Length: 432
Image (tube, rainbow, N blue to C red; front, side, top):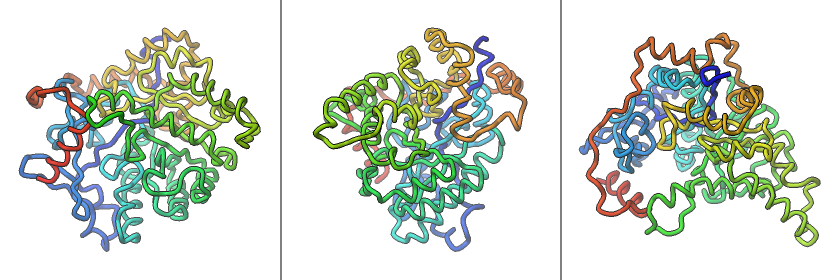
């Protein structure tokens, strides 16, 4: 086996939603109040919904740009690579990167539909969620069958409605729903509450994976608002570590044994120590804390939690401490952590260092993702046409250019960008 024989399915990418996405999927009654794209005087494009401006922040769509042009400023569709928002061009970029399948998280509605949850008219809110999901499943994913894993927004403000929506989209072939890594931070009950039981039950019944993406609590771990932004970027996976601890000790995994939860973009290198720590806590403290899981927490984690990584060589070298059937790969296109367009090269080097067998490589690169997310691209195209080599040949034949394109470098910052600058610059731009 060599790099060109890899078959890659990414369980974490992102879509920058295109203008007009609601036109065909929203009932006429709601079209006048639908989110719409407007171009501001400064040339940036924002989504406008109920008086709120929702910009596309630069770091969310930087694939194809030189790293020195990354930034936290709002941007315009014209400054993005077309694959960020155009489904046909996204396929071109996937082919150029040798990626067969992709699951795409939302952008402007936020990771678990917080935007629509804030809508006062809840009849309008559920109409927006359903329209978004129909666009995502039927148009974004449906335009190129066998290339995308559908991912639905929840009606997060109402567990019964959320359960109904899970069942509705499952009937359309969608077996993943995005949710918050910590719903309490969004003003809802925590994982320790019975509040979410209708949703968990629906996910179990329909074989739907609950995906917790870093940042889906609308908060990130920070040390100080004056710290360089590098500190925040470094600590981003720590949200997922906290979510993992919350879940392992919660009632959710014990009372819903068929539920599977993905820690999206959380990495895997931290997991061996985490498992060692939760088992130590269990052995040394369960006598007085009163928590009896019936098995070690590490066993519970291994059975139920799907682990996801982008570029994690140390994690791959530590796979003997993980359940290899629950490890999946991510590309993160078009975000700033993405390995596009060299994902195969970077992943192949890490896999080689981990000395995995061909069967284990296949599990990590695509078999696990296909099984866990009910995704079978081989019913659409022959397996031999799904490899890195075959897809890249297709991209080359189509003339796909992956070279970096400059849109004009911003002036160098006067000092290292701080966490507080992120809020200040975005607020200034969107309120101008």
